[in-house]
Image (tube, rainbow, N blue to C red; front, side, top):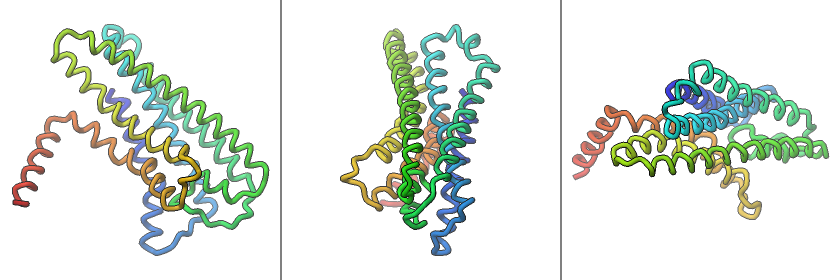
Length: 255
């Protein structure tokens, strides 16, 4: 679990560093400029890291399933070599997806100006600037990616259905609590990641607006990487104690 958390932390750090520093710099200098190469690099690294993170979250669901449902086989099914191979597959899937989408998106000639209604280079916003029918190729790639994402989502749901059934069969309350505490942080991270991403990309066009698109982009690109460390750290006893003391101190000074 901690090996996968290390990879998740690296992906979170990379994805938030791809978009936020440039946006903060532009806000500080009151500009919205980004070079063509910089935009392409931003799209590539963002897709690479965000898709890799989603694949890793899927793998972590399998990790939790084995830990709860087949604990005696955990060392056999998830040895160090298997963990390295699965993590490499997550990074490789992100890399392949990023190469395909970036190459295809930036092969389309823009004809609707060069101003994006977003704080970072986002593929749907870039496609709005294209007047070529070739953008249908990118739509096909997006459909394929959505299908892959849906398959991962189904796998995560089925894994947690099996986990829930196994936990409910545990006779002791302490055992059920331990199993839930192991799985709930991952489930919370997956829920935040998927809910924001799904709403950002699948919301009805009738409610779409530049301000709403901006809020949704922040929610799915900034919020999950920022809250993931906090969610997983809630299992840390020292951190929970420090948070409790901070809340007590804040409450006392408000009196």
